[in-house]
Structures are given as structure tokens and as C-alpha cells.
Image (cartoon, rainbow, N blue to C red):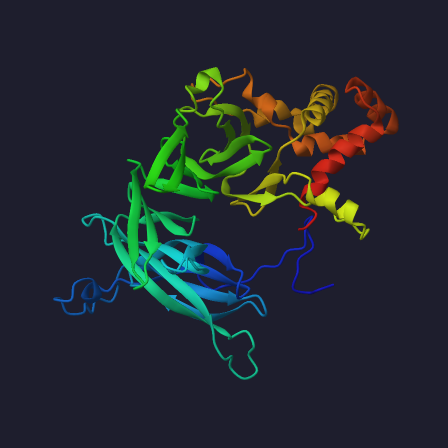
Length: 442
């Protein structure tokens, strides 16, 4: 067994010490490395902040956070290159984006986009910067194969307001700066040209792209569902949530021809909303329909949409391979929490949901629970007064850990619960197996 891994939990885990506080992280596929944003406390330098004043020799100087981005190689988990920002500048968001680097050939290349905030105290308005880096391949040092890449600054642009969210959209760079959304294109002279914008009037915390459709989340007015078009360049608002919500993380969750949004707020709640223009209460799509609310029990920090694992055909028969290829792609959302745990949110077929919902109801009402606690009450969200569509919003989400308790029951109790769900033991086991197989590739 590898000694550097810890096997106390369900998954083997290894901690890698970077040395500084990690703010953001992104994987760079072309070179197979990670780009990490870090901060550390440094003495406040008044001379650097205002060049007209000589350096202060005070013994007990205040400390400020200073940021840097580093390349972390997975070969030995060491820092192979870094770029340091000014003493009061912090990289808030780091993303790997496929950008169009030529207006004539339309060639695209994966680059690293960094959004920063420049903080000079309460008496100065906050500013920020947009950096675009390229990770180039260089000759490694002798005996150190991991040192084969370096950071190359492509362009930098200082903007009003901190850059709090970044994503790529159709080869362009979308950045949330202050209370505005700006879409920029990379020109031949290595400058960023704004082509479209949108006023949000709020501090934006989330920006996610899915084939030109963009999901925004702010710290007060929940989520916005918009779109970006190139001819002409324009940002269009499709719909938004009317409930007051402090969005921490959000992402898309497509299910066939339906489009859902998974949102995590600052109170450890998870909300599922849907864009449905045909719903009578959506006002032709202007309002997003709330489908479910669920208390997670952990502060969710990130939500990431991933494809579900598909069955791999071992038979080289072309008919078998075509059957696998033609199956519609399904997705799930992986949630990361501040406690270090991971959770999965996935869609279920209607028949499986109904069966497992009856199983969950039987476990809640007929089994003993730890300390006599009510699992249904534990998952209930403290309502802020907004009425949802479809009655009890808690019915839209199943508690996976609660449903899996069925596996540990005796055969008689299993059969009794399965018959009440209109199925047999093997049928319920297949429904649970479909959930467990969603993350086989991890």
C-alpha cells in the first residue's frame, strides 16, 4: 500500500502541502499540470503603495495578503514555476479556457485566465486585473523532468472592480468585473477587445458556460440564465430566479431535453431550478421554476457538472459499439464542501424515483434513527417565505445515504419494503446500482 495515502475513509486520500493558502485551482490538460492561486501574509509596504513616501522603518508593521500563481507538477507535487503579483493583489479565480488566438484563421488554444483583486483599504475603490497566461514547454533541468514548463504572460488588463468570476464562451473570455459582465476577444496584438457586456447591479459569484448558454449567480438575487450570440455580439437574459438567495456555487444539470440548475447557497442548502418556458407560472421562461430544496448539512463550496460513466463494450462487434455510442449522454453534479467531503447530485428516471421514494418513506417511518432524530426534518430547508411550485419541494430530492440503509436490512425486511414499492429485492438493488455506477471512473 502506498505510504503517502491515508485510507481511513471510504476513499484513499493524500494531502499535498503547497506552503501557502490556496485560493483557486485549475487543471491544464495540454501539459498535464495544475495552476494554483495562493496567498501569503507580507508586511505592508507604504513605499510600494505610494512612491512619494520613503520606506517606513516601523517595527510592528501591519500585514496584507499578497498573491501568486504557481504551476504544480503531479510527477512529484512540487512547484516548478510561479508568477508573483503586486503586494496587495490577489488572484481570486483561475480557469483554463479555450480562446480564439487569431481573427483570421480562427485557431483556438487553451490558455490560463486569471482574475485578480487589488485591495488598498477602505478609502480606495477596489480594482482588479485580467491576466491571460500561456504555459509553454521548455527544456527541463537535468534530473528534473517536471521542470519542462513555464508561465508566459500573454496580456494583462486592469479594470474597475474586482474580477470575481471567469469562464470561456465560444472562444471568448467572459469576466465578471465589479457589477458588470464583459465578454472579450483576444486580438492579434495580444490585447483584449470588449465585444459585449451586461449590467448585473450585483457582485457576481458564479459564471458557468454550456454551449453559449451562461449561468450567473450573485450574492443577493439568486441566479440569472443568459445567452451569448456573435452575430451581432449580444448578451440576452432568458430567465432569472425571483427569490432572494446568496449563491455560493451553481452549475447546469441537463436531463434529456430538460435543463435544470443546481444552486448552493450560504446556508448549506441546495436548490434545483428549471428553465421551462412552457410552464404557465414561468411567464414564457422569464422566471425559473423551483423544483426542489434540500439541506446538505455541509457548506458546499464548488459544484461541477460531469458526464456520467457509460458502459464499456468489451465485444468488438460494431453493432454493440454503436449501441453504446448512440445512448444519450447523461450528466451529474459533483459537490465539494468546506469539510473536505464530496457529494454527488444526479437525475433519476421517474419509475426509479417513485420506487426509491417509497423505500425512503418506509425507512423514515419504520426504522429507528440515531438519537431519535428525524431525517426528514434534518433535510428540510428553512423557508425564506418564497412559495415553490409543485407543493412540498423536499419531495424532489432523495437522500442517498438514507435509501442505502435498505442494503443492510434482513431479507424479510428487504422483501417487505420492496413489495410496498411495487418491486422485488433484485429490482430495488438494480435501482441502487444505477446510482453507485455513476462515478465508476473516479
